[in-house]
Amino acid sequence: MADEKHVAILARGRTDWNAWRRSQRSIGRDGGHGGEPDLSGANFKHANLHRCDFAGVNFSGANLCAANLNWADLREANLSGVRMNYANLVEAQLGKANLRDAQLRGASLYRSNLDNTELRRADFRDACLEDASLREANLYETDLRDASLYKTDFTGANFNSARLAGSDARGVDLRRANLTDVDLSRVNLDGASLQKANLDAVCLQGANMRNIQLGGTTLVQACLEDVTGIGAWRHHSPSYLDWDTLDSAESYPGALYRECGWSEWEIAVARLRHAGLRNHPHADLVKEALLKRAAQPIQIRPILICYGFEDREFAEACCYWFRRRGVRIRSEQCPWCESPLNFIAGEIPSDGVTLLVLSRHLSSQRLSDLDTSDPEFREHTGLRLCPVALDDSWQVLEGMRSLREVLGTIPIPDLSDWRDSMAFDVELSSLSECLGVYFP
Image (cartoon, rainbow, N blue to C red; front, side):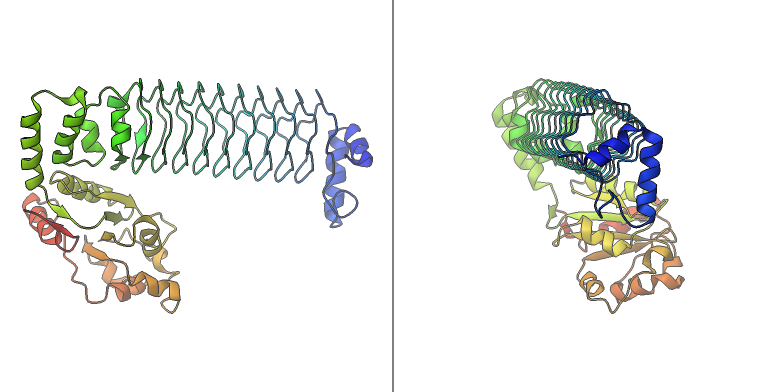
């Protein structure tokens, strides 16, 4: 139950409450008895609490229905089981708060911050979360049906078993989100970003998926029945599409398979299974599939191209060269603040190989924090690297010393003249075996 003293202080108004919070912090105490303020179970229905400092406050089980909490600070607050239906939380700060089993039906959280919040089984039906940030939030079994999610940032969020049917998710950011077993039926996902998202067993029946952005996206046992806009998907790198997903829709544009990294022989086999892609008898398709498979290269490892700032054009040219020849490959730009070796170790499976683009854009800043005596660094020496150089700066920059130790005596081809199509073709052909690719 709520502490009556704390309720009384809050009843005096925002100015007195915030001043009291500051005074308690200044003496190393909060709540007057060494803990955070306790307002659990209290009734604040229709209360005006805007701009109040509620960081760390215990509101569990409280009634905040239709309360005004605009611009309130609720970071790390305990809001489990709280009733906040139709509350106003415009631009409120709720980072790392606990909203497990909270009721926020019809609430307005426009541009609010809920990064790293616990939202398990929370009810956001008909709520407004436009332009809000819920990065890395836990939305397990959360109810977001008919919610307004326009341009909401859900990067890295966990949606396992959540319900979003009928919501407006135009322009939503779902990169690296876990959408396993989520109901996205009738959702408007126009312009959504789904790079590296996991859509295992997701239901997208009747969803609008025009102009969505994919890349490294997983679609396994997904239901795409009556989905619109498949032909307008934008692919940044190959995604994984399985047969169950393929069978769930009436038709797919042939280009989709290529964008998902399928080889020509796999596309031919897909046409055998999928009526929407058939244009001649089965026997001819079987023969076509076998002939195309015989002409495909043998690829024994996943391949990643890791490049630095401003080397994107070269990486894209490499991807195009390999993909045109039936090789599955993806490229990723190494973040400015991260060592390329750490980045590669986290991006590719242990059996993969990396085409590492060396140039002045892999700056010394990224490598200066590498300690060659660190056991973790020694593990990097087991990475399969196939380096190429676009200039000689990597040999002279002081910060590159650690990388040179990892590379050891690995031969490093000079591709500084990569814009010469003939030289480019010759060099990449010679690199194929190093990458685990064997052409017929």
